[in-house]
Length: 161
Image (tube, helix red, strand yellow):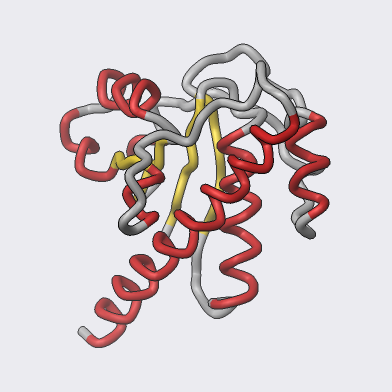
């Protein structure tokens, strides 16, 4: 299973989601054969590390984002990844516009996995204060748990076949 988290610049939300999900998989499903990555729909920050505020907020929760580097979504990503998870509706639309129609069913919103929450977007904390980065982590932790539950159900169903 290959999962790609996507936001606009790949320095705040998607690397946070990648880090949160990676830790959750290590804690709850270390046996799971999974590849986790993140990217941005735009090339604003290619090669840069995550925003220092994202790194600091994640570190306070025991998540290390320091080794990650921003990259832009490539055409190959639409073939390579089993699931492409957009942080908000704008990036979801951008991905659908770029992806071949055969890939559309694999492009979903991250907050779809958060259960009953009436939030569709993970808000971009870039221009806000420190609480925005904490909110991104809160939402990412909630949605990541639902995503892992779905991935594990799918994995177990495939193993039984």
